[in-house]
Amino acid sequence: MSAQTDTTNDWLYTISSKKSVLDLNFKEIWRYRDLLFLFVKRDVITQYKQTILGPLWYLIQPLFTSIIFTLIFNNLAAIPTGEGIPSFLFNLAGITSWNYFSACLTGTSDTFKKNQGIFGKVYFPRVIMPLSVVFSNLLKFGIQLLVFVCFYCYFVFFTDTAGQAVPQMAILLLPALIAFMGLFGLGFGMIISSMTTKYRDLTFLVGFGVQLLMYASAVMYPLSYFKEKVPEYAWLVEYNPMTTIIELFRYMTLGIGDFSVSKFMYAGVVSTVFFLIGLIIFNKTEKSFIDTV
Image (cartoon, rainbow, N blue to C red; front, side, top):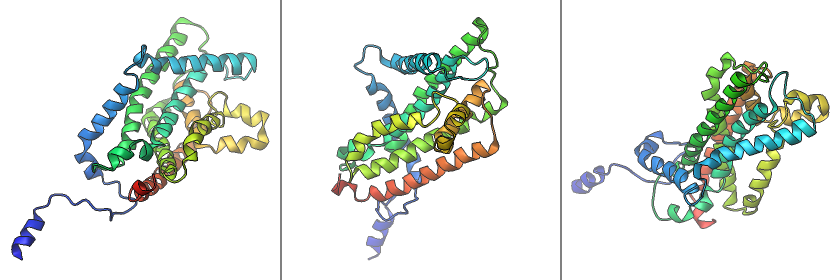
């Protein structure tokens, strides 16, 4: 009897489905940090492995999108971007911040479906998969942010069109704002991923829904302009957390719009709440998803 007890006490780790739905288990994630790094490396390398331009797509997508937005929304539709702010720089700021959120959302929205093979064969903390998407997209965001900085320097030092585009002291809070983007995208993506194990239609709606959400997030227009032109529907855009994040990003980097602690706190609270809700649903789904996926 004592021998059995000694043998039982020799186990280092116990894998059990009986855990709290709010359990992120940082200790276990830290133990599997090498696996997290490998998944991040895989995501970065394999995405453009057999492409001609490779990582240049990180630059091409935001640049071409900014050019199209400038031509259509600013030149043709005559949407103002703020006094002395180049339209291209205004759009590039919005697209840079939007791209990180949308990449986190779409990349984590099919976690269970995309990884059902490996989930059914080997154990590791399942939340590592969506976390790896957030970290790999953070590298892409860093590259796109560097591109934005380069174009900002060009407009400031080599043209006379930069006007009032001056970074504000609030830019010191940019790392926290980036964390809000990642948390919001991760939480939203985990919710959708959990729901797609039963409702496959959501897989087809994600891409379409993200495009619609972009138009409701003040990516290509200032919030003040929308409130002026369509005041009766302004609340739909104003209370969108991504609108607040994008407006704050533009204020920090270009000095347009306004900054308030309440807006910053609103973005942080909503992002955290979405993350916690997503984590609860994700942890609950991982216990039985293999039977429904």
